[in-house]
Amino acid sequence: MTNKSVSLGVEGLRELIGEVEGPYVLLVAGNPGAGKTTLASTICYKNAISGNRCLYVTFYEQKEKLFKYMSNLGLNLADAESKGLLRFVRLSIPSSIETFVEIFTSMLSEGQYGVVVIDSINPILDNLGPQVSRAWLTNFFYNIVQTTQGLLVLVSELPYGYETAGSGVLEFVADAIVVLKQKIEDRFLVRFMEIRKARGSSVSLAEVPFSINVGEGIHIWVPPLLSEVSPEREQIDLGCEILRKAWGAIRKGQVINIFYPPDCRHAVTFLPVLLPTLASKLKTLVISYRYSPQAFENAIFTYLSTRGVSEDKIRDLLGKYIKIASINPFSYSTSQLAIKEMEIINSESPDVVVFHGPEIARTASDLKTYTRELFNEINYLKNKGILIVRFIGHIDETTYRLESSMADAVMRLDYEIVNGKVALTVFLWSKGRDPHTISLSELESCLLEACGNIK
Image (cartoon, rainbow, N blue to C red; front, top):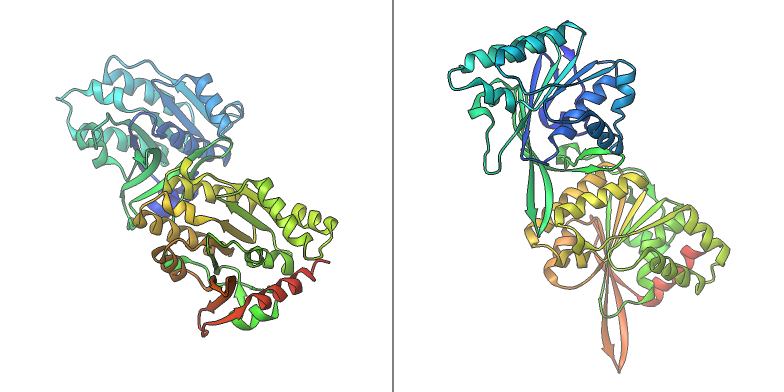
């Protein structure tokens, strides 16, 4: 059977290398510990449980150890094996290439396999010797995929400092090459996937970050192209007439930025953070870089209770609609932080995401890296139809202008000292509308109007 569709098992990988139809050779290369076996096992398992039998051949991996580790990642290889969907074979390192070919051919003849994994190919290459030609090796792999009419996954161990496998021979025979890398970024280890080759597909994004998570396996974080970003979605009622007039229609998939003086954190600045939840009962996820979940919850509780909302209503609101997560941005590199945020967001599936204190994360990174990750993250969330609210301390003009350039609506609180007292003004702007200002008392009235929705 020809042109057999094969699953890659990892969301995002198909976007990078295109459709995979057998016969097809995929080379997965990388340094030790980069995640090669995890990726190969994922492809094997996902195909197996969909009825595309997999043969997994290894020279190094111990079955019990591999099955246990993959089980922690959500891949139940033992179950697939018990159902006859997967066959795991550990071979001794062959004394000769002829011995390996004989054993391997015998295994292929014993069952119909849509996917074959060889983890790793290095012992075979080591036994070939310099006298074996590229033509012989090409013919060997060609015969495997022609026999199975499916996918052959070759895992290749790259020594540190090397960029090719098998002196370039494997790169020649492969239809697609995925190189898994580990980099030191801001003193942290970050995983990247490089798409070095994808036959029949135009590779537009050559390198993307990925993560390996307990219970979930591999996640590849592919930022959407602007042409792929979904249009803005349904309108959200903010429950406040003043903001309706100033901002017009606010929709899911838009970005609202609220800037406040870091040395004058007036309680009313919490208002725009809560408006979508108060007025439209939308599921809201708060990611705070400054407060613990309990501290942020207490702040919301105090804020609403002093505006006449009953304690029972506040508890109901917090229990049903608001989820709070805290992240120390200095515990991650900038790329890792973006991945961590998206993992939390995907697990909660909110309507609204509030980022509280991103100016702290901004100071942990250089401007170029921060801009890249911010732009990709915003487009990722826009594509999912999530309203984005960024609650930001105005620490410098560069950060303010950068963040504002990506926003659909802006609120900025400024203060000045008048006759020895602090006076606050509120600047409002949204795309397609003229900017204007309102007073603090007008913003307070907006708050009371919004609170009236939940009394």
